[in-house]
Length: 88
Image 1 (cartoon, rainbow, N blue to C red):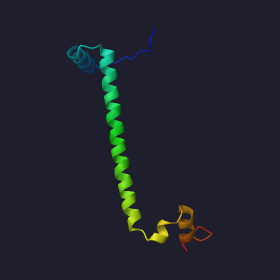
Image 2 (spheres, rainbow, N blue to C red; image 1 turned 45 degrees about the vertical axis):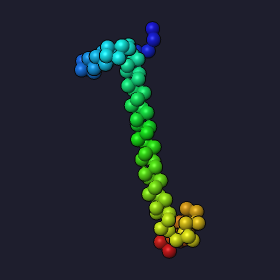
Image 3 (cartoon, one colour; image 1 turned 135 degrees about the vertical axis):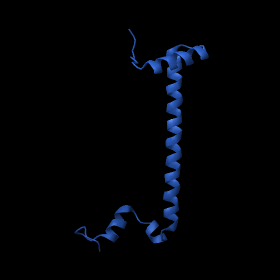
């Protein structure tokens, strides 16, 4: 026997059956397509958020002095804190 999914919510079952009937597809194919569509939309949303974050990072970088922009994170932390981890 193949993999199974037990849906106990009657409204969800009716939605799946109704949409499958309208599309002329099996319930399994309809659910798979809906999940794939949702996954694609979620990935697209993640990519938009990443782009927004990158734009903010770029804006911050542009406002940094060139000498700070050229520093690695370790060099920056070494410039801020002394060897005991206290602000210099």
